[in-house]
Image (tube, rainbow, N blue to C red; front, side, top):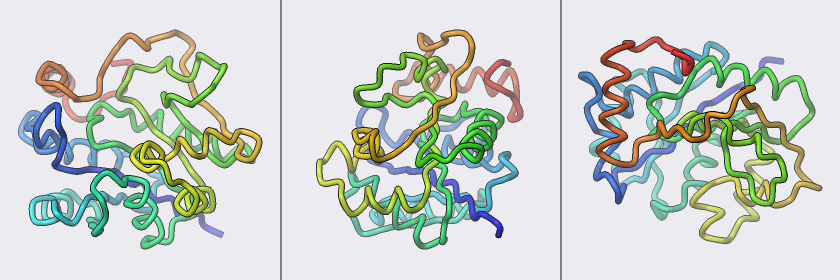
Length: 227
């Protein structure tokens, strides 16, 4: 049976530190489009979906569709990212969900694919790369530069989080409820041999955006995080 692997990019216009940052121009294209392009390089992914609040649909829907992804808007609290991701995954009948954030234009498609292969090779509920796991004793979990964050989650596990997570912090960040129950949910982590956690490649400030523009200006669209 073919596994339906759906990548879901959570996006919204209501960012506070850098207004409407997903629309920021990076070498001729909006940052959200750059993220979509990077995710679509992962050949094992069946569908790339961008999930956003319905209040942003007028601006984001056509942009997402023109970039070759599926647009999915929901009438939910904009801060309920868990709900958005779950309903998008359910709509597209995902077996596995790859969770991506829209402010990571330097995401490495090769590392996402490697994490997916690693996840498939183990009987686990969630696989993660560069995610701050509550109460984890393994400091290797954040050895990638910030901005390469990615998670692979079974649909069953995501559904349990959707029905059980009630804290605002659990719904805003999608997976903390899962990680807080290590006896119930097994996880697997990917990390590099060396520690690069001091590098910040996600886009939260104008300086972050300028760095992303410089990388694309120098390396083009197809590059790895090692480049």
